[in-house]
Image 1 (tube, rainbow, N blue to C red):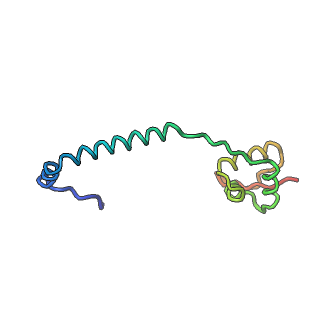
Image 2: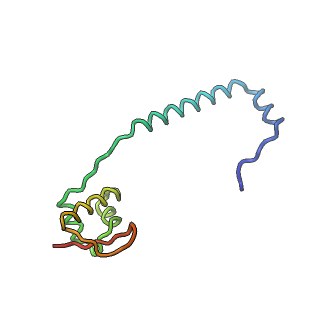
Image 3: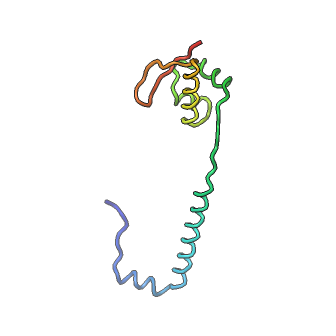
Length: 111
């Protein structure tokens, strides 16, 4: 809808002929940016964050309705970490599924 306007052929030819040195600098900087982005993509670190069971239990006891999103917000971790912690607690029997649907499950703390 509102993209960049296409310039006339005459004006683009004038820009190329008037400053040929600046075009080669731009090409070099673009290739350098591509190489830097490839390096950063290849060297991603895997961060393994785990919730300590005592801290997790304390957070779960204080919560009225336990959801994955609320647990992640309270402990300051990613949702995937909170999800794995709740699933682990569910297999141990400390938490049981109380309701919810799809990805929005509500759990209940079992004492």
